[in-house]
Structure formats: structure tokens, C-alpha cells
Length: 168
Image 1: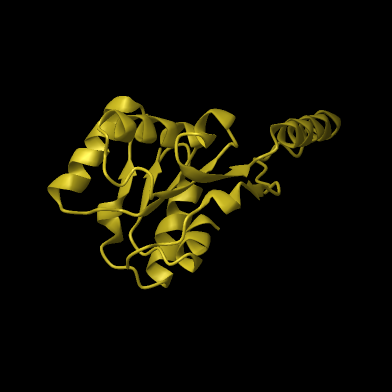
Image 2 (image 1 turned 90 degrees about the horizontal axis):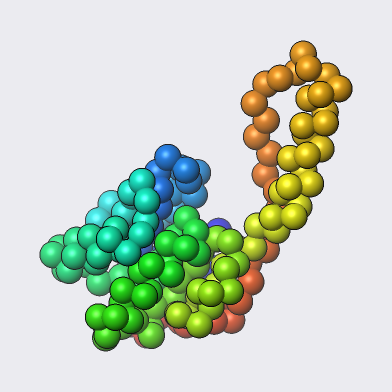
């Protein structure tokens, strides 16, 4: 999981950027792992919004600056959220933009050059094939029309991009 990887690299100030409605499992996983590691004040470092666009990235950064929270690493519900955040940091010429270790979801290649980031590749073709198989199963057995939750294996790519923490 993303927080464990960042923790192993020495990071303790780990932020999270999520859409609570769309990614509650990812967000709760980050919070649970932060708590299990004994990282205090994790609620200050978690930001949720309906959208995470450039405007939301600005609100997140203002909140971090206002409470004196400087994060050194982060996990986002998607690579798109990281792209917005990193573009804003670049535009502000933020002093620590090049030392952040970030992990997203989606393996968007557009994000790769913006920061030191790894990403969970969700293999969308596998997701689509599995969803189609489940739909065909439902068509053949309509009496089992219950909601199906299934985890599809993901792969963490570009893990070598993540810097170790330079200060605790």
C-alpha cells in the first residue's frame, strides 16, 4: 500500500488527496495505515473534495500553509489529482516541489515528468474484461443480481522515482 512504501522510505509527513464519494476505500486505507504507524494529526494532512482540480489544489495548499503543515510525501486517489497539485506547485515555484515523493493511481504518463512519482497501474483492459465477464454471468443467471465487489490486482510502477526522506 502507498503509505507503507512512503513510510519505508522514511517519510512521516504524508498527505492524502481524495474524492471521498468515489474513493472511500483508498482514503480510509491511507488513514488506517497512518494511524497504525502512529502518525499523529493525520486529519490535517487528508484533503477531500468532490473534484480535485486546480482550484481544490489551491485550497489544499492554503490549508497546509495556514496550519503550518509541510508534507514531504503524498498519496492521491488518482494521478489526475497529483497533476493538478504539482502544476500549482510548479507555478508557485514552491521550494519543496522537487523533493516530494508522491504515489497516485492510474499510471498516467502525463504526470511522470511533473514530480518524483510512482503510480499504481490499474490495468484498465483487465478491469474491462472482468466487468464484461461479470455482466455475462449476470445475463446467464439473472437471479444473482447482487452488487459484486472484486479486487483486481494492480502493479506499482516507477517506484524508483520516489526519493527517500531527507529530514524527519
